[in-house]
Image (cartoon, rainbow, N blue to C red):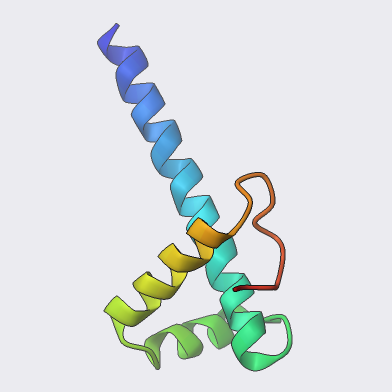
Length: 76
């Protein structure tokens, strides 16, 4: 029983992280006007932002996105 709860929690955490990653990729594309080609581009973009502001933007993007489609590059 406990193993199932732990597995479900880990699965939910992985799902959330995946959705957050998709949101960050979409926000990068919105900000830069093009998709990222390399991880280094995303790192530089993310590091140039305040942590709290980026987290807020990701959260807002997720709350405005349909739960089954996080690949859309439009927000608001």
